[in-house]
Length: 134
Image 1 (cartoon, rainbow, N blue to C red):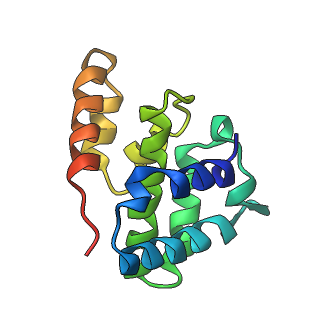
Image 2 (tube, rainbow, N blue to C red):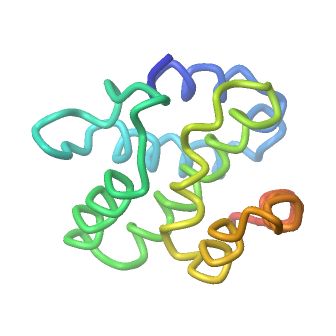
């Protein structure tokens, strides 16, 4: 499964379908930016979830920063929501490093300590469930 496949599943999810129409439109724009981003000569849409890494996420974020901080943060926020489906649906957890390395340094420290992994996952779940898009 690649990022494009996961995005298509997100569009069919209740999480997406419960959003207001304007918010859906904003999310779709961010998803388009995410999927069209080229990292190391490869489209993000084509990257397999098992190959996704924090390093790839960081390089993508740097590309988005070239278009402005607001856009970079918006795309990151939407990407987090999409990647959260991976966990809830029991898919491979290859993108865990994405959340721990982009804009969440304190969680990255928790992730690095194996004995605190449960706390890390609880914290990420809490953040993902309370994150809003205004």
